[in-house]
Amino acid sequence: MKKQYIIAVIAVLILAGVGWVLAHKTTPEEKISNLDRRNSTELLPKTEVATTTSNPIHFTPIIPQTIFSTDNWKIYQYENLGFTIKYPPQYSIRENSNISEPTWGSISFLSIYDPKDTSTYEFHVVPVHIALEKQSLIDGGKIYHTIDELILSGARRLDPKAEFVLVNGLKSIHTRFDNKDGKEGAEDAPIEEYIFIKNDILYYFFLNANNQYNDAIIQSVELR
Image (cartoon, rainbow, N blue to C red; front, side, top):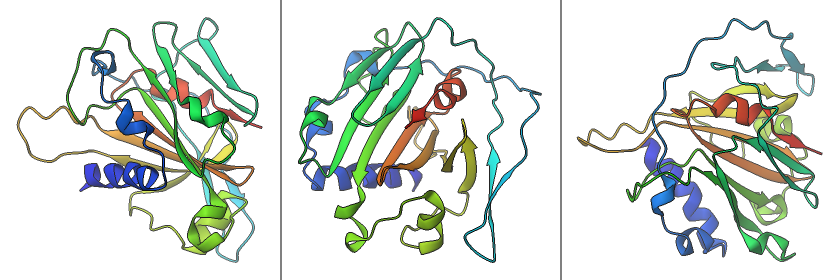
């Protein structure tokens, strides 16, 4: 069921005219290793509380499971969106060139992948995939300026396991999907989804939860 959810999200993007996801079928470079994640005892700041309702929403800082120095990591920036992300030097970026077109409504924006990957499995999960949606084209034209507004609106059906978290100071909806379909030998890695809102654009981050750099990558995200 969880795998179907992720496929449904991508399907919405395709129906909105993206097409780019299908045009870039899984390549041999898109396999990642399942790596163990280590526990962290790092102290965290206090939980942030949204004050937009009498039943406040608590946003809890995520607990990094693995600590890495990102000083030598590559940096990707897209100035038109005020978007920045860091990624390990051995990884590569695949950007959708259509992002520069002003007419997109929903788009598969960016993938971070390991060039040494050799998987051709249909549902293989790369380290990071990012999709965007312009809100004026969804939810009947309504625009939610913050994650708080989106949550309180009830416009999006959230998974029962969804958590409200702070990622590098940014409010986010976080959900983990285990993708257990019971098929022997299936390569479906667990997925961690993070949803952000910035400048009225919805950012969907899909990360391979087995990737050891997962937490450091998401913590490097900046939206200005």
